[in-house]
Image 1 (cartoon, rainbow, N blue to C red):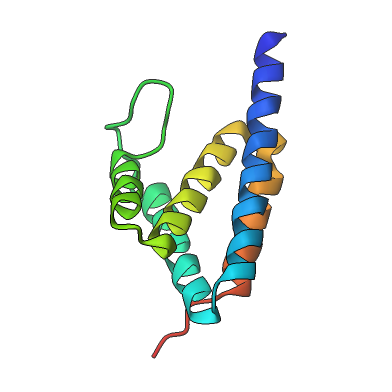
Image 2 (cartoon, helix red, strand yellow):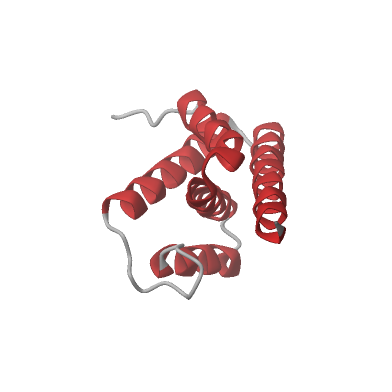
Length: 120
């Protein structure tokens, strides 16, 4: 019983976080910055899904390389990389929770679709 409430609250937090990050970034940043965030998010998600990293901490399936990229972005104060890696981490954690957190995945997918990477 307690496990259900724990998953439910985690899912709700992921949904709130994804919506909050997307809303604040779309309000604050120019289009080119949003495209960069979208690119980082998309490529990080694809890499994590295509090449599972078995070097994760117990109970957390977020790849170590993604956590390190997030930490590095925070240290460098690189807002695009920080938002992109954060959204990727939220997406992966939401996928682990399944249907409860699907709105978080949907919001991130919609963000990526709204700000597609333009190939030169």
